[in-house]
Image 1 (cartoon, rainbow over the protein chains, first blue to last red):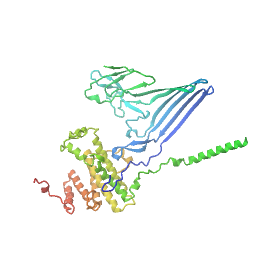
Image 2: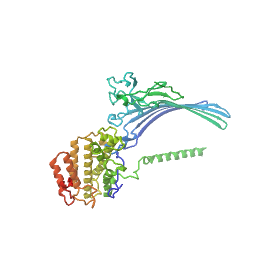
Image 3: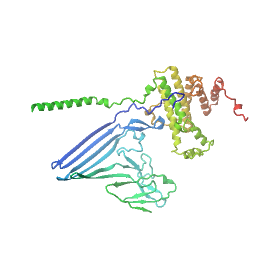
Length: 258
Length: 267
């Protein structure tokens, strides 16, 4: 909108003269084997990637005039993994063919270095030596039957439950990345007809999808909802329960309300 | 057989040469070009028109509000009026109730809006103060005008911020790399900076309305004097406040102020 008839010019973003391209160094070793005139193929690969100076929207305090700036992340991130696949034609006939393929990969992500992490915007989010995709949570040790409040493990044994960053932090860093994932695909073909079947398998920790904050807890194998009337105090505590969800078959949960 | 081998070799050589030629131009492919829809800071402050437009952004930001009542176009009156019992909240807005009952919560969105909009305006003012002096395409008189107005506006913004938030980060540059870990500065120092900015503005700005004939839409030396008088009042420096106020009162060519008796008359 013009002011006194003059159209204003507004800054769009903070300038960053140090902005540069990110660098990734990769090394990979792979082995490809074929047996029985390529009726059975096996691939094994191992890779190590290191990525630095990633291009990010770096958060800046509001008093700098903008909430973020295009900057290079000082983080050095490492990805290491194995990839394995095997497949072959089980039945190879004139009209009918059946081939099976199986693959899986195991990846590990790690924050190798982050200079000045404690004074960066990610001080409470990242931990050096852990993956980037983590969540820091207290270890829940049950509901106190006397008070009805939640109890947590005092990891550092200082008599207090603390969630502030630093040495008094009682939280564990929980990895949300999959431990492994893979798939199996099965191909049948008869003359012009084809049937494809795909199965996926993932082993991963995740947030308990049906828990409500502060109102329920989950026991391995069964899901139990406790309706708790919390009067003041710890009702503000956010609680996430990490359970290993092995999602390779349908699991019907048992729900009981106490 | 022999010619086949020769051909094959020539094809491989041709492909090899092509690949080499492609990598030579790779460097150009990864260099970013200048943007087409925005101009750089240097360009903005290279001409009088653009630099004036950059200054106008401060005024516009404070008066426009993007369609709502926010910092600069009434929200401070609203918030401080609610806090001090001048106003009663009848709107269905819990955030406003927090102002009225003096129970401001950390997540109150209006508080952040005041803070952020004020510092955005300071950024726009600092852009002028930082970049205009070194510009080669602007006349000196215009430079003084632009810097004077920007300093007045920066002082005004700091004045509101320090009164609402106490100790605040003192921003005098737009280089975010120097600012990210900036702590709060004590109120007394901020006030010193405000007074210094206003004194500069008084010197740089004309004591008339020559820049905006017939209108009072941009700061001039009187605006700086009036604000300085108010600042001295808040600092409880009574004689200096009186001195500055007298400058305005005595400028009868421009201001015909009613007398105290007239202003508070019961008739």
